[in-house]
Length: 252
Length: 267
Image 1 (cartoon, rainbow over the protein chains, first blue to last red):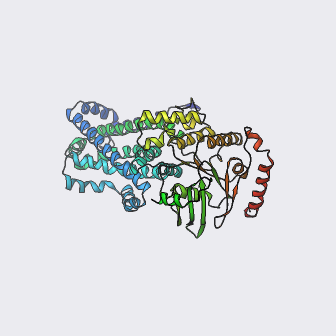
Image 2 (cartoon, rainbow over the protein chains, first blue to last red; image 1 turned 60 degrees about the vertical axis):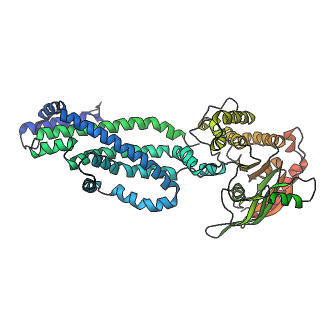
Image 3 (cartoon, each protein chain N blue to C red; image 1 turned 180 degrees about the horizontal axis):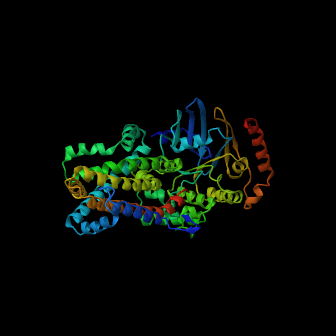
């Protein structure tokens, strides 16, 4: 970013908005916006509470479990759809529907079936993450060079060998893109799941803060969650840059 | 059973027995394209037979039918007297675009056919390393395909095809994606390979010069529908001097006469 002919770091815009927030807060225009400084003070308080660490642990646990299941199930399903017309015909309409559907509306259904515990949150994470993982693995499997497919057949690969030794690796760049997008969507899943269940984790904290109109607490918690999502995204982008080398060098 | 029968019925001549027989094979593609029309051909042991013709004559289709990669719509392919419907361990394939695994080293690529057969790692790597040395790639075992030139990649493809010890080597325009100089060296090396190994080579090419240079027999295919118009026994003497072949009057005359026959099919 250039400002008055000088280079300004992109993060500088955050400062401008933080300042605006502080001014609006100090002016006391609305009870919804307490000053940023008092939100930050509250943030330090919240972070010291055991309930916060319990919520963080629950979030981490459900996020890791849910995404692991979404990857482990979504990748083979996507590969299969990319290589088999029958599987594709059966599953693609559903995958497309769920990819664009308002998934939050599904969470109450999961809640009704699996209760208000961690299982529901794990399932919500899977529900948010899996569709894009399937779609990208499918796209990867479809873009495999036809001569590699013929090579597998000509040298007598079994179906399992073709998938595990050739298709999976040939589709890896697309699979990894899908996993990255899936992991980002899973962040939404793990938060929305907790908010809707609202008796465990951050959802429970939000419930307490909002029903008691504790705006400083709420903003502090929101900042934490945003920072968390941002951190995960940055981490994934780093990993992806390492993988790009492989993606670029894979075409023979 | 069938093999015994055909051997008993075959005339006792000195001519090599056909290892691969194509019997009135037909192929149609969607949209009414008649790719092959009742093609019959024999391929003999220790010989290289070229399928030569302009693009669209179905030569690659015929090769892939022999490989078992695509099904024929009529007729049959017999390998060593047995009718085949799919790929088999006695046939191996060299691809036009090499079809190497980009994430695997030269060594693993060359050993891949054996890996698929479940040959233990140390054994298959020993076999592959020997083949890599034979095709002139010794020292490149741990390179990746993208670190090699096109010609070197095709040598890996050839090593992979040889490593599984198939009796029949099917080659689909193997030298068309490499530069002219590399191609000439390849053609010379192929002559050595044919002389050294008692294998049946089926070779698809659209280059008349290449076909006359490397083949013992040439099957000329003509397009729409794909038919065998002529089978030519190549009688170019192949002495120790491989370059002399290209100047030999028989070589030059044969190239001319094939061109004369194919000219009418070229737009």
